[in-house]
Image (cartoon, rainbow, N blue to C red; front, side):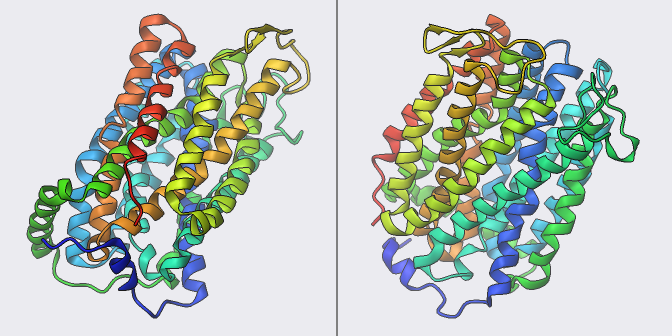
Length: 462
């Protein structure tokens, strides 16, 4: 296979692009999908599972890690295969529809997660894993539509705007859940001081459990414009023929990948730092719940603050991406994440960076202790850096990958983002279980960011 220079690939991109409505509709996919990551895996359901369904927070963190690891392995194995088939068949929307349906059904099933019911844990974790598979695969094919939507010089802004829009969607969904559904079991009131809508029972944590069905309904409503207004790739051949051709093409791509040194180095770096980032987001809320005793309202408010920081970070990162290049944006984001994670490990409920402070007092105002405020500030740095890191990563892939096989390479991108994604949650789960210490489990993330940064330095954008 002849290797084409990245600049030549970008220059050969289509010269006509769809109208603004098509681009905006595509952007709303991020808005539609984000509540799964915000409500389920980070700020509402995951901490609720660890603190109210599992026997104790450490066990809950460990079990959640094993479920995420299983989902990550499935995604890693199938993403490049499905991407190759999609490139050969041409169309993206049928794949988004199929995996979006899996996300909707599996996330809605989380309503069954009643507090203290240990028997429900296995099917609940299976539903979480299936929802994760649906969300990630739908995202693979949505990402592959990007090169046909805007000129190459605007890809960074498109990616950054998509991530920022997703963060805003996460904020809105969190406000809805915390303000109208999830209530403090002690007071029976939501964050906005209301009784829960639809008679949801705070004692049974029905507001927390409602995050699952809300995620499914939200996805259906807000992904619809993309199906209506964003043009798909034209169909090339039937799925059976595409299967044979796609797998053969994937085999050739994997064989030739070592000759594409920058692309190979980037995919390897992405494999490492994405594992660290996903694990950080997945366990940040659980870690806070165990360290400070936060419940849904505190964790959700923390999530809103992080999402606001992430919105500005992704928006600014998109502009810096077009101006400085995605590699510099990724490197800067990783340095911020590394420093923030290292600092968080030095924050406990009664100490900040080795300095003793007063612990949180029962009944005190939200985030009133010095340790809690330090955790929130560091969380804002993580939120502000996480968005640009992910947005610039998909931009860099578009710059490096052959445009006629973009879904296949987004499949490989997902592969490298997931092939070791079970390692981060698995290590956190194993170390937490072995030491009975959440802090020890989270410390492993430092290694991921240091290694990913070192590998990124071998990537040449041009």
